[in-house]
Amino acid sequence: MGFGQLAFLWTAIIPITVLLYYFFRKKYVEKTISSTMFWETVMKETKVSPYLQNLQRNALFYLQMLALFLLMFALLHPYLKSQAIAGEHIIWVVDTSATMLATADDESVFDKHKKEMMKLSEQLAGKPLTLMTTGEEPTILLRDETNVSIIKSTIDKLAVQYEQENLSKMLDFTKSLLKGKETSIYLFTDHVERSELPVENDKVTWFVKGSPENLINVSILRFGATSTDKGISALAQLSNDAAIGQQGTFEIKSIGNGSVIVKESVEIPANDTLSLSFKDLPNSTGLVASLTIEDNYAVDNESTVLLQQPASQTYVDGSLHQLVTSAFQAMDIPVSSVPTEQLADLSEGAIVVTNQTEQLTASKLPVMLIGRNDEKAKEVNGVITTERDDVFAYVEMKDIFVSSLYPSFPNYETIARVGDDPFIQRSDKGDLIILADIQMTDWPLHPSFPLFLWSSREQMSMNSNNLGTFSPNERKALSLVTDETAEEWEIFSSNDEYISSFEDGGQFFAPSKPGLYFVKSGQNEKQFAVALEQQEKHIENGTSFTIGNASQDGVQETVKTSLVPWFLLLIVLLLIIEWEVQRRRGFTN
Image 1 (cartoon, rainbow, N blue to C red):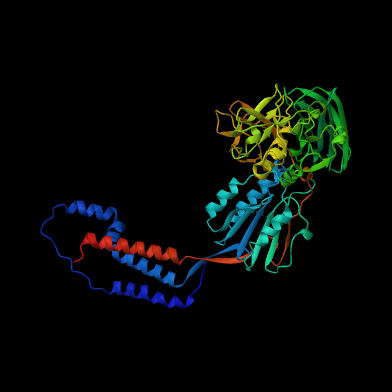
Image 2 (image 1 turned 45 degrees about the horizontal axis):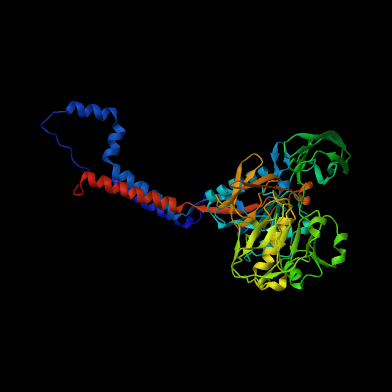
């Protein structure tokens, strides 16, 4: 403890003067009282507790002397010295990518950083802290926060989000938080190069907290599967980032029944990859590959693949109106226009949009048929009505005018009508048929037309029970319609654990943890997978370093915490006690 105003030491004269006055104050003369009643009792109490008796008789004196001494110390401006983080403004950037789960000594890098943040929070000394996390969209959790309890609570709630850290976005976002003051930026990550950090600002000091060295990682770098006439063909590529060879066990399980269909021992050379291929595997809706091996990073030792993934290319018949191609392009959908005679030469994975009726049987994937080339249209009149279907999740059809329609297909499901006449149909294979040419309707003039084409393509290009594969925390608009008995879609893990929910037509947020998931709405159920990004399948040895003018550990400033408020509080409390003592004795005495 120190004192900031030693010049006020002369105030010690005041309590000394009061003390001298006490010794020279007038003494009262003791008189004998004739009554001796209770004399013996009083004498016993006095002899038993002489100090208490003295305190009771001189309570006001002791209280006043204590108040004077406290006031004297308060005038000296006492303070406590403590070490604090350098800088006027503190920014903590926390990497929440999957590689932060790499472990060393049974503790993940992320947990280690959380413990360090807890310790550093005690050294803020009232300085404002801004806490943010990395990701596709960097998030500020605290801004200019000084309450240590709130800071610790926020740190305790931090969790890995598995998505890539996107260092460039984080750096740009951090620059917007600078205020021209001396700033200390702490980056809690696994690995970053010195050259990646901006050093042009002299008022900014970077403190990088990295992962331990010599971490071993073996990963399932790639895993894919396709359906064939004889079963499923799968390909896996295992990667070893360690300097020595690694041995383990590779397994492939079926999503349908969970049975192990492949299990074999593998040995991956040092700093190399191992490719594995499997053919004629039993049919399944998806496969889960897992690698059992001793390394420091287990997140990339499992990979899920769903079969019948969305097609990559859409082809529009050149004989169709240009507005069809323009509508696809307006939704940023890859599309190519091909002559009618070349439709038969397209790859099996292509989605075809045409008016050639024979393509309904020629193509293995669902076809979008706009009009018909084998029938003549007839005039119709009426209001469009639709059934409850996923393709209409974002589409409003009531204001569309249709002048003519082609004859319908008798065995196909009708999902939209003009009056009583079928307008849009779906086959058992998933073909979507619009029984009108573009010239027969004003639909292309409505915003719902490109939305319908996008929604239809989404439905046609994937299995009706398969939403595809997403990256962690990916946001995407899905063309889904809830069950009549439910108002929203609920997301569950493969262990039937509830994750989140989204409303009909709302934006879909993929879970953060990689694995297999399901969305449910009433009796409807669809599956999807969350896959780890490729950048998160490699770990590098991290280092901790400092760039800037502050000391290596960042604790260089001596902060003086004033004790004056506490002294003043005690003085006020003593004054209250003195008033109460005086009141009980009587103010006249």
